[in-house]
Amino acid sequence: MKIKVICVGKTGKSFLLEGEQEYLNRLKHYIPIERIEIPDLKNVKKLTIEQIKKQEGDLILSKINSGEQVYLLDEHGKTFTSEKFADFLQQRFNQGGHALTLVIGGPYGFSDEVYAAANGKISMSELTFSHQMIRMILFEQVYRGMTILKGEPYHHP
Image (tube, rainbow, N blue to C red):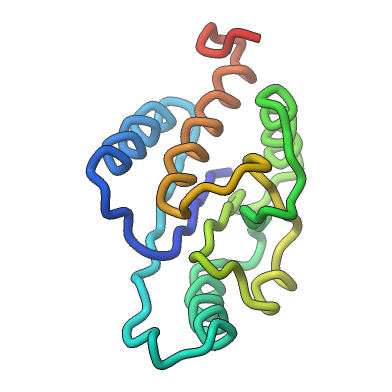
């Protein structure tokens, strides 16, 4: 199994890109991981929020294959401690499938079609983060989870 992270929009800050790359490089030692970036939509000022979510949703769904376990990063999702998130990862790995797919949407969230395709929702915090910043946080937490599962000293409870 691999982990696939689908992200809507670009990360414009170099320090966030460097952080993402740091954790992606670390994760390669544990599990295959793929980061898919969906480009920002053009001419969004002419679109309603629902139209934006629909177009982004269609692009997200085009990147999801059958047999993937899909979890959306959503403010109304389930929250975890780092240890419980590691358990969540292990449970998904045990269930099998082609990939554990984690989806970070744009600033308006997800379309109804994306919600319908998902197996569940995860919240990284009760705080609100930009969708660019949450990427680095997600990659760090996946890395932390892998080190917890391997019994390595990165995480200090």
